[in-house]
Image 1 (cartoon, one colour):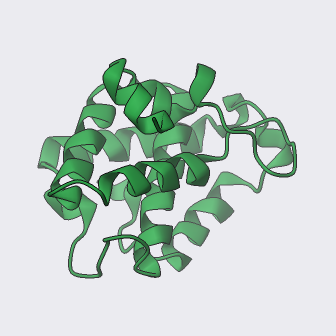
Image 2 (tube, helix red, strand yellow):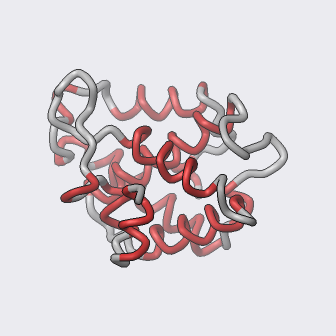
Image 3 (cartoon, helix red, strand yellow):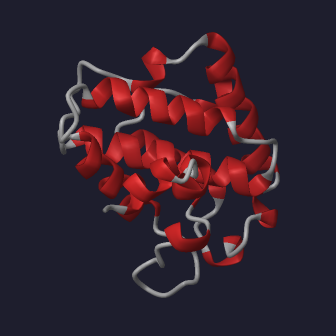
Length: 156
């Protein structure tokens, strides 16, 4: 059973996306923070075996998004997970195509929540654990566009 299947069975989608508890995957250079792309890749591996993988991705992402609060760590994890989606979408990893965009599936209210959380993490980045060892948040947000995110997440 994959980590995502375990999270699904235990109703721990939020913990999975945020890398909490047993879903924490250490960053490869042992910087002490969670490696979001490993978990997101595991999610995609699970989903590609489902009958409607893209619709399932949208459903689970919405469930995750609905669980988040205005908190630096929630905002950071959301930002990183969106980045993982666009990184995998850019090279057509798994079942993702340029014609389907997760953000296009979200309601105006869900997009607004993304904007609120991304602005919150931008303004409170110093409260994210390990942020002192990371690139500044403005540089990371510019990198997201480079990796295929067509939206300015701050303007939602």
